[in-house]
Amino acid sequence: MGLVVRQSFKSTLVTYVGVALGALNLLYFFPRYLNPELIGIRELLLGVALSLSIFTQLGLQSAMSRFFPYFQDEQRQHNGFLLFSLGVGAVGFLIFGGLFWFLRDFWQSLFAANSPEANRYWWMILPLTALIMLQNILEIWARLHLRIVVNALLREILLRAGLTVLTLAYGHGYLGWDAFLWGICGTYAALVVLLARYLHLMGVLYLDPSRIRVRRALRPLMIRYSLWMIIGGAGVVIAERIDGLMLAWLTGLAATGIYSLSFFVGTIIEMPRRSVSQIAGTLITHAWKSKDYATLAKLHAQAALNQMLIGGMLLVLVWTHVEALFDLMPNGDIYKAGKWVVLWIGLARWFDMSNGLNSEIILNSPYYRFNLASILFLGLVSFGANYLMIPRYGLTGAAAGSTLSILLFNGLKGGFLWFKLRIQPFGRSTLGALALLAGVYGLGSMLQWLTPPTNESPWLILGSVVWQSSLMVGLFVVVLHRTRLSPEIRQGLEQALDQIRSMTGSPSQKPK
Image: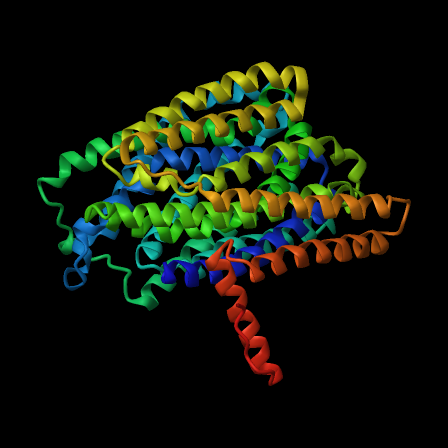
């Protein structure tokens, strides 16, 4: 777990720098320089490309992690597994990309009534899909070598910095809208080139076709697994992307643009989970291979508790200051319509984090079919819920429908792991974590009551958010440092304090 913590900590720091840059884009530059319809066009095109890329990978997003131990051989360049995976991705792109292009008139007809402007830019989807697919394969390859920090640097910072430059150039009249969209493709292309260069410098960019060797006994297993992954990919697309796509279909691009900004705020809390799951997935694969169920249970419980605490703290901070967030945003009165989206999506992501590594454990196990079948079922539930709720409740209906599918999905996964392995991530520390989060939220609510909002300047609003958040975070940190609620977080805090003491010359003291 030490390697997980170190790599995850570094990656989380990078990720939150990227989140800050992304927040600057989505909460300041976008509402200032782009109208909701233009934001909606970008969101729709990227959403379709991201969804299509899941299919074009033909299950590689999970198959690479699951089968890498069977190819692992440094002397033989891991039996050409990287080039083999790239070849599979190319075949998948030809199949699903070609099918998508053949049916383009059908897809465009769905958006013709409420989002006709998006159809002018349908040409962008296939090149974006190919670049996202390559990015994912190369990132997984780096992750399999337990390297995720540079991945995060490129994905979280490069892409967002490029988007900042493009938005400013568009806002000041240096670029037209078509050039802006081409620039987005260009940033993804730059990311792929830099990822390949990084792997080359690591000495693991193995592209020798003579090294490819897939054992005969593995072939049927890989084919069956990949077919299930494609089915599961359909569920992921429906469960994770359907809300934004259906908003564009049923209401229009303006609603999609507003929803995307509020959705981003709600998903900020899950950033720590992304880093943990990237590394833990590789360790879980090895634990399953050696049937080390004790390690699985330990990883599951540690991840659940720590993600519940960190994600919950972020959710409390976001929801406590959500009104101030919209007050600080340019044209915030327009985007305030997505306020309840923030709460629904935030609660859903926090609940998902609090359930530990159930998806990673099941997907890397002999029982992966259960996860895929259930996510397909729940994706259909999400589609149905969104179809019924969006026309009636608009943005909030889309968020509530997606939240319902996530809650049901986690309940099914948790019950399945208990039935099969008798492992579950909760314990007495869970109650302590919930009590701590409730106390922090109570403090935040009291501070809000003591300092009611007024028509203050943006700097005064920001200052109020900073000092209130500082007190809330201070309470959270002190309790975790003085108790044994989370040994991992406590250890991390103590290490940070030791570094501060070493710089100031103060003697080191360990908490009792």
